[in-house]
Image (cartoon, rainbow, N blue to C red):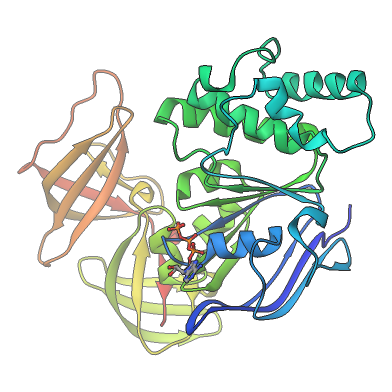
Length: 362
Ligand code: ATP
């Protein structure tokens, strides 16, 4: 396993005067499930298309498996792309669609049929080969598009929001299947998505992009627990932010004063950035609402009042107004069968753990 199947160095892309990719340097490993995640317009599709060879770079380097790809057309690259629209030919059968890319190879008809059957089996469509491509569901069309890309045995499969047209249940099922398929075939998958949950579920590593730049590249749990900036923390999952005042800071950590929480000591690894500003970040699930029980060990308690509640079945998200401040915190709680939900207006004690806080200095 090479550590750098794809290497991008100082990649820039201009669409006339619009600067779409700004100094992108990135290594993607062989056999990993890698996602490009970011808000609409951040440049992730442009980057994926540049790797595929559908966009030229304005400057910078792109190597795949050690070979310079600049000037190499898309059909000569060891990549294959699955588009959002699937691009299935409706007048052909499922098998003809899947075998389409093999038509110019020197394989015999029987060899092609064997490859088509194997690819259909891989995506769970065995027995569907003879069906007209217009007579299958959206989820099945997605599988046909995958089989058609995989049959060419690319080193890298590029996926541009492949699940966005599917309904929620189907999307969840396909997320699991794509992950299983990637492990089974062992090739590198690069997924473009603006859905952070999808990226967290599927990826070995994720690159977060904002405004044509990469903000952070890390495994999902690192992104979530150790975001490199407030912007990443805000984009991945939900986080409360509270203004803080630094009372003391040295290389061991900092003591901060936070409205509603009082004075808190934080260790150095809870501090992100070194700018003049200071804000505390706390995830909703690291706090809990107490209904009479003792707070968990090491935690502190503040009083408030429930402002609002959103019920999600397994979880409830409470907006809690913190006493003596104008701050409202979002606290999430698991719903338990027979457990009582707090209604708006109810007094609420919030337990919070100083070890779960992050201090953003920007
Ligand atoms: P989305 O999730 O909405 O697809 P994205 O992150 O994939 O967004 P890109 O499609 O890469 O974003 O586009 C990045 C920026 O470049 C956008 O502002 C877009 O308008 C611009 N852009 C993309 N293609 C072109 C083009 N062919 N000509 C001019 N500008 C373009």
